[in-house]
Amino acid sequence: MAKIVNITEAVSIALHSMVLVAKAKGKQMNATIIADVTGSSRYHVSKVLQKLVRDGFLTSQRGPAGGFELVKKPEEITLLEIFESIEGKIVVSKCPLNKACPFGECIFEDLTMRMTRQFRDYLNDHSLAHYAEGNAHL
Image (cartoon, rainbow, N blue to C red):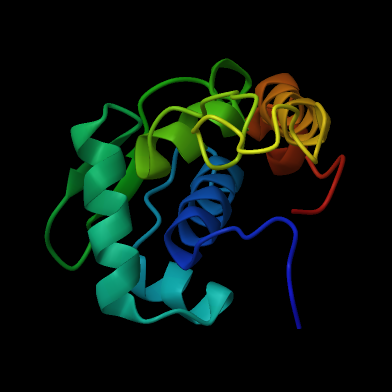
């Protein structure tokens, strides 16, 4: 089945992990619990979480009582920041191929540009707090 929008497993893990850490409200959340809740491999969760630590979203502490905590308040972190930490900056371009159209006019007109802007704006308009406080489901 074809998908118009494809969210990578790494982005899904990052978004869901950050919401789980935000819901922990200052208590440490470990990778094993996150892996169990998200149904992901502990290795992949750990790899994604370490990327979020390097990018300044989380702190980590090793050991049996260790885990991850948010660096900033949930309302200060947007879903866009998390997405771009994992996938890179979202680029709004006129052509999905980023090349000159052989037909002189794009067959998609401005559809891909509008969809990309709408997706980016949605992520930017939603913070972790929106999901951590139980206002919505991710």
